[in-house]
Length: 568
Image 1 (cartoon, rainbow, N blue to C red):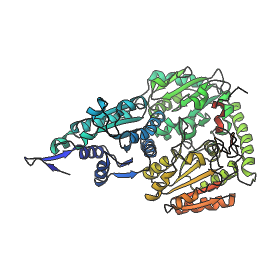
Image 2: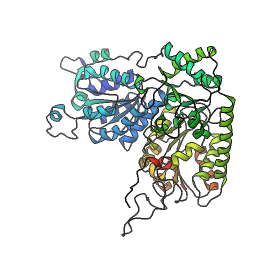
Image 3: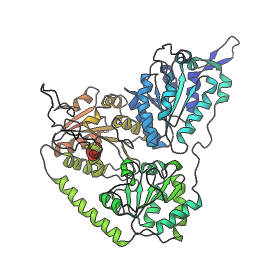
Image 4: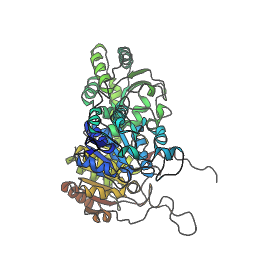
């Protein structure tokens, strides 16, 4: 849209120039919730050809942007209003930062003069300074002539080094401020190489290979950083040429197929307890790996760590051979050195892993095939596993406590970046946002396996799924509670227990209100039929899968993190 001044020179304003800057930098989709002061900005973006996906809550929009960034290695864009809307989105932005997903949250903000003097403005909040502790970078654009630089800085910060979340603050005054249209267009540019290749030092690679050559019981641990790197080709070559067993972390499942002969996921406890040299590839020694300490680990284990962030080294255990660089470059250089070293695990090591895998697989199959009424996590997820053998390229979004843990262990993944789950913080609320983001960005079907408690965090977004007619099937493992649904209340007035949700809830009827397909399943046969029909239809669908309220562990597999009172 061109404006004119008294001299008839063409003008533009902050809103239009912001859209032009996003398009100049290849932005194709914005996820958001509109309102004052960004409603017209969203309209202009859509008018320009950028897809706008409108959500019911900013947190879900932020999660959609985050997972889009993870899948594309380009910053996902979330648009929010000021103050409460900004704060709602900030949760997802903080999670994107801790997960290493590139994302930019763009929020409108109030009049700086009023905010700085704390005079009380509509939705008044000092948003940039509030965001700073939770993100890689935060910037404010006060003048339209600074938009191109602001967008470029945000993109570079989101993508360079370890990716993460960036906050970009657009003041209300800036959005409507005009400037010469020709000058505005001349200011636009695309940052050159915002995520440059980062080569490891030859000394670091040599040191890592020397250490690996001494290992009798080596192990490779794959993290979601390796998945983000999209370095499957050198990774596969390195794993298979060395013969080293590998253990994929949750979102790294599928980098190599879960049924790969070197996959040690079914012998996790054994390999962590006995490995003498562990190669961490895009994986961090945080709580998900017990910080590399304690009874679950060989106390004498030595670590080789491949990570783009030097500060990550030695964060919990001394790293004997740090390799700082991007994953692809580091793997290529290690492959180039491979012929100079004899690296091969002892046969006794691989044989013991194989034996343990066999024992654990047999135990799991017994659980999966045990009939129960009502269903439990095992026999219901066996149905899912079997149906998904025909859908190996589907996105699998997964959140919950027991729903997360059991799905991860039961449902195999065969391709990279298809399993999308709660990530580093392990928190609820990502389900529908990730589902929408993956469906829009990747153009594939999505199956979201949700605990009934987890679904509640973002369940209203099923309207968004139906509004945009996305090929998303939501499967709720409904046991009527947080963890489980059989806890009795602790008061005398009949109040439900803290972990209880509504028994007999019919979540399937929610999606009917929005025109989606609804299914209720109480037996394995009903579940198989419902899931088969839902996936075949490629329509927005929801399956309410009723399972036994007495099944489920408190806090899932991380109950040890939940403190218990010692007072009687």
